[in-house]
Amino acid sequence: MPDSPEKKPAASSGRIPTLAIATVALGVLASLAIYGLSFIHGSGSLETDWDTSETIASPDARQVGDGSFTVSRTSLSAIAPNEDGLLLFRIAGIVRVESNGEPADVRCSVKSGVAGDTRLARASRLRAAWPRSTSELDLHRQDVPESSSVKYRTEDSKKIELPIRDVIQRYVDSNALVTVEWEGYVEDEQTWIWHLPDGSGVGATTLPWAVIFESETRPKGTIECKANIGDRSTRITIPYRQEEWPIADDQPNTGDAEAGDATNVQ
View 1 (cartoon, helix red, strand yellow):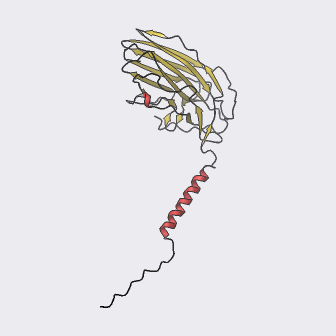
View 2 (cartoon, rainbow, N blue to C red):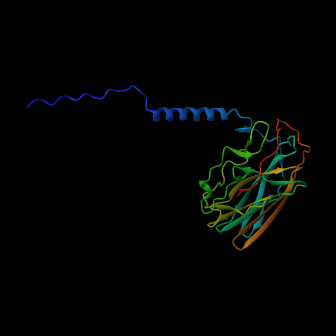
View 3 (tube, one colour):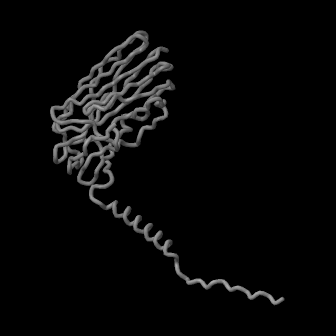
């Protein structure tokens, strides 16, 4: 029986498939688009520092039953108003509670009471406030960011990077279990509630915080903190007001002052 004729392989056309060409072309276009965006006016962020920082006077520690409570290391930092008169200012401090084995709760509200328009600044879609609300998550598991990225339109960017590690290195300095939650959104006020169900642990627990506001006029307001330790409580109220006014512009913060509306802020 004669052998079957050998089948020859089909000749290759030498062409690159159309789908492959399209895929490569799309990849090139996407790369060019991303590259081009980096040159668009107002994109990215601008790293800057506060033009002024002042200490806010704090009262002495309060005795609460066998424990103690204090609000200290409070400060006011601000950048000079830009061309449209909008500025940012930060209020920061710590609460320190020693409960001697009793469960404890601490509530702190920072209110902006300026004469003109004011509201909480935004960091992405969240308030520019730290620590973040952790709900049931232990505060030890929340990291302090390298800087506070805040939405704020300037001549060169849509947001600015402001220092935060200068006032917060970590959110809790003891082994005690701590959770923190935010109260509902109020335009000109930020409230944290810390829960220490097992108390402050050995010695005292230090809990730092910071919040940034937008303002059209001279920063001022109040810090109000209340501590419950066991069945005892105490309250501390601290007024604040920007001493340096007008603020000297140590760095150029000029440009459009639109920071966007506050919708979707949590």
